[in-house]
Length: 390
Image (cartoon, rainbow, N blue to C red):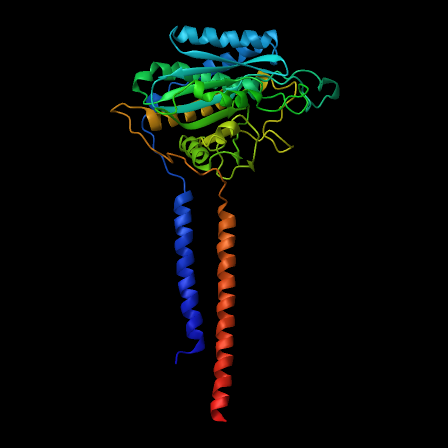
C-alpha cells in the first residue's frame, strides 16, 4: 500500500502542472501582439494641420448647443469637407434636446462598402467651467480646446488622408462628430451626458443597410490633444479593441501615452450607445480627474490652445491611421495585421491579478479538501485495523 504522503505528492505535482498550464494559456491570450512596422512612409497625419483645425474651432467661440457659434462651427465642417471634395458625403443629423436644436455630422468614405468602421468625437464645448480653481469663473463657458476640439481636429485631418486613399481602403469609414455630449450634470438644465450619440444611435439604420453591411467597430477620441498625453484603460471599452490600440501605440514608440500599467476607470462617453448595440467600441481618453491627472484643465477656463500639444495630436492621429491600415488598406506593398479582430464579446475588463488569486485560492482549497479526505481515510483504516485485531 502506498505511503499516505505519496497521494499528496502526486496531487501537488498534478496541481502545479495544471495551474501552470492555465496561467500560460491566460498569459498567451492577454499578452500583447508585437507589431513591427516597416511602412512608415504610409503615415501622412500632419499634426500642424490638426492644431490649426483646433484653432479654427476655438475662433468660433464657445460651441454650446443651439448657439450661433455652434452653428458656425458646424458650417465650417461642411466647408472643410467640400474643400476635400464636393462629392464627399456629409449628412446632418438634426435633433433637439429640451427644445434646443442640435446637429450631429456624419461623413462617409466608401459608403457602399460592406464593412463599416466608425471614428467619433464630440464638437460641443461645455456651458460652464465648474472645476475652475477660480471660483468666480466657474459659471463661465469652457473653451473646449482639448475636451471636444482636439478629437474633432484629429478626425478631420484623418478624413483628408483616408479620402485620398479611399480606393485602397477595403471598408467604409464613418466620421461622426457629435453635438450635445458635454452638457450633463448641470451645464444645461435638464440635459444628460452624450445626448447626441444617443440620438444618433436611435436613427443609425437610416445611414446603412444592416442586411448587406456590418459595423465592425467604433473608436471614440476624447481629450486626445492635451499636453502630457496618457491614455487610460477605459473599462466600458471592448478590451480587445482598446488593447490593440494600446499595442499599436506602444509599438510606434509612444510608451508614455500608452503606458503598460495604465490607470483604469469606467467613463460615461459617446461610445456607450454603440456598445449597447453590441458594436465593439473603445474610448481613447485620458485621466482627467483628481490631483494625479497629468492634464488638469478639464472643465476649466484654461482648456485653451496653450495646453494643446502637437505631439499628442500626432501620437493619436498616427495610432488611429495605423489601425485603419492594419485592417483595411489593400495594397500589395503593405503588410496587413489582423490584430485582435473581430473584437467580439470582450466588453469585460480581464484583470490577470484577480485570475491568479482565484486560481491560487481554488488550489489551496483543493489541497485542503484532499488532506481532509486523506486524514479521514487514514482514521477509518486505523479504526478498521483495530476492529480486525479484536
